Image (cartoon, rainbow, N blue to C red):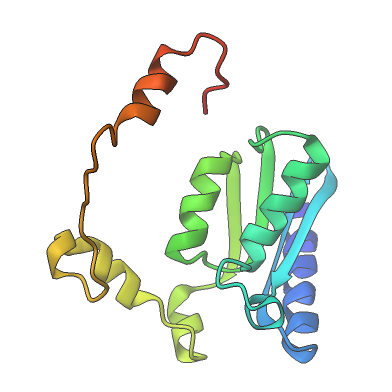
Length: 155
C-alpha cells in the first residue's frame, strides 16, 4: 500500500509538470519513509537536456543527505527510466527503483529512446554523432594522479 501511495505521488508530479510546461515525468526519492527528493522533467523549462525527473530527484536527495550516494533509498518514477537516468541511478546506488509507465508507453507518447540503446550498442566509429579519441601528451596524467592519491573519496 505504501508503494502505491508513493507511486501516486510520482505520477501526480508528472501530471503537474505536463500542464505547467515541463515534460510528463515525475520522480521521488524516499529514505526511512520520508521523501528526501522530488523531481519533474524540466528539460524545456531549463533548456537542460539532463533535467529529467529522475536526475532532478537524485540531485535534491543527494543535497538533502549531503552525500553522492542514495544508500538505503527507494526511487519512485512515473515512467521506466531512460538510458541517461539509468546511468545516474546506478551511480547514485539506491536500493530499488519502482516505475509506473513502460518505455513502450513513453514511446507511444512521443518519448522514444530506443535510438539511444541502438547507438550505445554500435562500435564508437559507427555512431551517428562523431566520437573520436584524441590523446595529447600526458592525457592519462589525471588518472595517474588519482591512483597515487592516498586521501581520495572513492565512488
